[in-house]
Image 1 (spheres, rainbow, N blue to C red):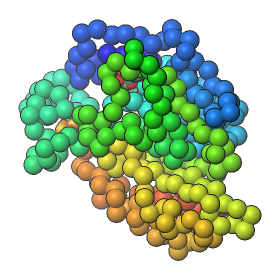
Image 2 (image 1 turned 60 degrees about the horizontal axis):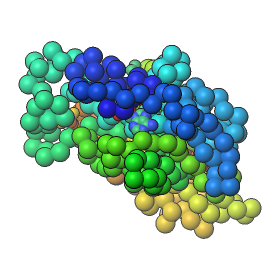
Image 3 (image 1 turned 120 degrees about the vertical axis):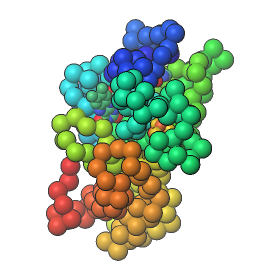
Amino acid sequence: MLVAGGTDVYPKMKRGQFTPRHLISLRALRELKGIRRSKEGLWIGAGESLTAVSAHPVIIKHFPALAHAAESVSTPQLRNMGTIGGNVLVDTRCNYYDQTFFWRQAVGFCMKKDGDICLVAPGSSKCLAIASSDTAPVLVSLGAEAILVNKQGERQVKLEDLYRDDGIDYSAKTKDEVLTALLIPRDSLGRRNAYLKLRRRGSFDFPILGVAATMEANEQGECRHASVVLTAVASAPKMVPEVSTLLHGKKVTRELIDAVADAAAKISHPLDNADLDYWYRKRMAKVYTQRALAQVAGLEDRSIGVME
Ligand SMILES: Cc1cc2nc3c(=O)[nH]c(=O)nc-3n(C[C@H](O)[C@H](O)[C@H](O)COP(=O)(O)OP(=O)(O)OC[C@H]3O[C@@H](n4cnc5c(N)ncnc54)[C@H](O)[C@@H]3O)c2cc1C
Ligand code: SF4
């Protein structure tokens, strides 16, 4: 198994969730380091720490949502070790899986590791563990590409195509591929972006809902581009497809934002396998989408709550 910062891999090895025969460290690879502007956009080496990403001046200036998402991950120590590459590939989570070996043994294990059935939805043929990366929804909403390399060569794919809505087989990356970098295209440089994260403790919890929004408007205030991506509502980051049809070419109003937020809530299917009630998380998908879109559209309204 490949390991970068090890902040997900090592705790999971301790709990017997990962049992690799060999670990291959990526930490010394210079090819995975650096954050630089190129003619294609902003190239972010997969081996850069979350601390470096959140403190980088170009990222703070142009992609505050990414800086915020990176700095909202766990704790300062873990952000110093944890990398952005490890973050976009971080394992899916579930309350029945993220437990010690003894706990999991006591409940008879589940299909994600050592068992046969899903304990959250026993009738389900697939694992429904949730996508939990903070930076992935932001990067997807910014149209980022993933650069992957193996012995056969290099390939570049849309980041959203790297995910599968399957809690076990959640990544389309092949086992022998190393993620070299994430590329945010040039087009995204002038777009407003925001990321809002829901969690119980603001100091270090994983997201139980994350909403990333990106928008570009012309001088008349008409929307030229918009995207909303949710996390922790399925096993992969989820784009809200209605955004472009509802907003493109129009002056963004509260009514239109409400319509997008309704669509976001509709495609959110939180289950009883993470913190806080799942019906509350579904309702918050609407509220957080309203807030994130209001922020990028410059319609911030304090009456719908304090932005995180
Ligand atoms: C207490 C705690 C709280 C946390 N809170 C959050 C949180 O709020 N939000 C959040 O998003 N995460 C959270 N995490 C998870 C983790 O710390 C971060 O996701 C971190 O960014 C993972 O990066 P890493 O470099 O340590 O990954 P690793 O643990 O090294 O690897 C993670 C996965 O990515 C693969 N991988 C890593 N780099 C590459 C590469 N370049 N190419 C191919 N495969 C690669 C590994 O094989 C592994 O499957 C938390 C972890 C802990 C322990
Ligand atoms: S969703 Fe089901 S199969 Fe997946 S980790 Fe949770 S209990 Fe296990």
